[in-house]
Image (cartoon, rainbow, N blue to C red):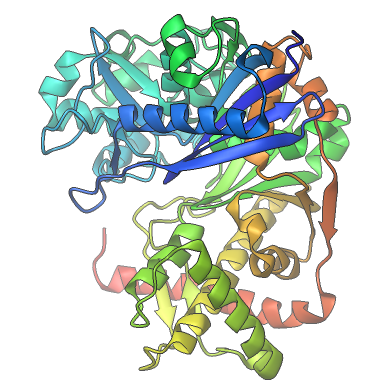
Amino acid sequence: MERDFVVAVDVGTASVRAGILDRQGRTLAHAEHPIAMHRPEADHAEHDSEDIWRSVCRTVRAARQDANVPPQAIAAIAFDATCSIVVRGRDGEQVTVSTGGDSRWDTIAWLDHRAAAQADRCTATGHEVVAHAGGAISPEMATPKLAWLKTHLPESWAGAAHFFDLADFLTWKASGSTERSVCTLGCKWAYLAHRDDPWPRDYLDAIGISDMLERGGLPYEAVPVGADLGPLTPQTAGALGLTPSCRVAAGFIDAHAGALAVLGPYAEDPQDLARRAALVAGTSSCVTVLTTNPIQIRGMWGPYLDATLPGFWLSEGGQSVSGGLLDHLIQIHGAGQAADRATHERICARIGELRATEGTALAHRLHVLPDFHGNRSPIGDPHALGVISGMALDPSFDGLCRLYWRTAVAIALGIRQIVETMNDNGHSIETLHLAGGHTRSPLLTQLYADVTGREVITLDTPSAMLLGTGMAASVAAGWHSTLAQASRALRPRHTHIQPDRSSFAHYDRDYRIFQRMLTHRAEIETLSGAP
């Protein structure tokens, strides 16, 4: 039987998605299943990796059955995932990362900020690692979280034998391979792929985790995205509803899977590629650029060599929450709505009606700084807080719609700030390629074009993350020799969204207010004696 299909698995913050793709990059079927999150304390967020794996198995089986593809026709499987940290013991058992001690919670979620103090100490080292993180180590990265684990849960540290980024955990679970991806290690684990000696042991020693490599079973060298890690084990093949002949590809971070899908087709022309950025926007947002030369910018993560496409440096700016902030506002508002897709769609429909009657006057005195979970870029301050100016005593649904609208504008203004900062420091971004959950929102899609003044391009595919991950699987399957070739071969049709130039003056005013609010926030923080 011809092996003409691959499986792509995308593990997000709240759910797992799986898709079946053919040799043309078409998604024949996809399935989704929620995953649990444990929030035992403020700034703590934890997953159960076995719960994630069960959801992976369920979605892969469901997608394959819906596609009506026999198991023997699946050539390879690949995974992308959030940059969460899984801890396992000597016999592969779960090791708790939770202050409650329940071993079920063995995974520190990417958005967990428990290690803010450790991140500050990492930054204070002034190491080269810090420079490649934009001048400040984020508590979302692996090394501060592991430093927290060693300090606060020493028994878990002593009982650990494997530290995995979530995508690497999934390839280990699938194949038994303990190899790690250059994407996960390079972007989140202080691995410096451009050096002959990639692990900065002096940095690890300075932050108190000199034994991280040995304790976590981390390899000396990472493998490229899409590398063939071997076949599925018989046990996992049965759990996934596949066969042991299915190959397992080295995976990557979810946002970078989306970036590969939208930017990879341009890799043969590096100058053209450098004019394009991936805007991967869902719970959080990432602006990713691939260049042949390293460009280091304060407040931007990277550049990281080979993190997605071999030979290219990846630079990334981002927002720690974007869609997650819109969810949060829905949940806390007096209108009492559930933050599900139907509510978002109902709010956006009402905003459309309000804009039709009120135009640019809609909530024009309401302004937001969206840094409710810190500012990842371009300020690089995980302690930053959000600001809302211009609130009235309005608990109605329309009041929620007005706040939602102005928060969406603020999120787009933050993306404009990131893009302009990157361009002021050596990049040349002209076009934004949008991927992620925000592609389902016409309101947000048009806002990104109108507020930044740049063309926005979307792909005609159910999920750019699944597509990018399918590209990695196609390399492990032997269909293509490089990710760049796979990206060109599997690229779907795309849609161009042009900015409404008539609205730019209005959003330019909003941007000036946005910048003034940043200044005022800093002044208030100084007056209040904030550290």
